[in-house]
Length: 311
Image 1 (tube, one colour):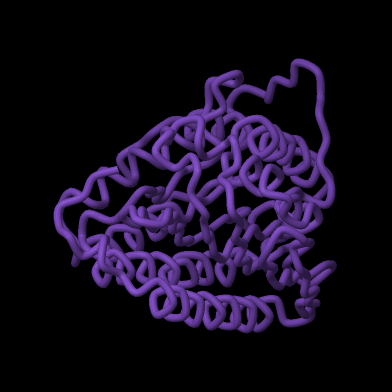
Image 2 (cartoon, one colour):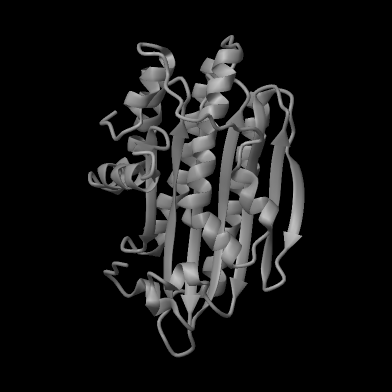
């Protein structure tokens, strides 16, 4: 973690937590309302939950909508006296500290294979120990997983990502795009999960206010990137072939979330609500032994997209 000023060490924890939490709750509301409008039929159902070791959240899930087969938009705020192993393994300086972690995380699995699956999250973390300096950072990002990719959609997605990053420095987009390509990579498949976007973590070097501003820009940017793609593709006709391919590719999504995703591991190790943590899974998926798409087909084209590109 890089630090360049003393601001992070003099934060009023209660004020900061309340400020970030207020934004995250409003972000969850805004995303749910906008997705319901785009869907036109489904509504998010909310489950409020409490964590025995401290904290809780509100999970919202939409099922069997006109566009969204299943999607979840979750808010959580958890805290405790000790860090989980998934955090302290790579950050030994966090051992022995109490912590608070909060964020909004979402995954949308549309029914129509021509509408991409999407994921986004923004989060804040602070760890404290009496007599020692606070350690805090922001993280998050958004990424897109199309099954039948259209260049205009992917270019729009990355143009939004560039616009989000632009006020914070010329290096932000290429750095966080590269991080996204690296993070959402299935090593055992030698392919990216989708066409990328942004991924950032351990952000505090901008100071609290600017780091918080960047996290908000990413959170707000998700809808700017995703909704135009949904509107463009949601009425595209499809048949069994496209649906079968979508379910096959959804299997890759499951593989990544269960094998590599740090958020899933952190949630389970901190005793979070299992149903909320695993709401990122698609409602249906399938696996096929040694599947090979027909050369020259639209399905074969996807494989060329599943590696880092300069969109």
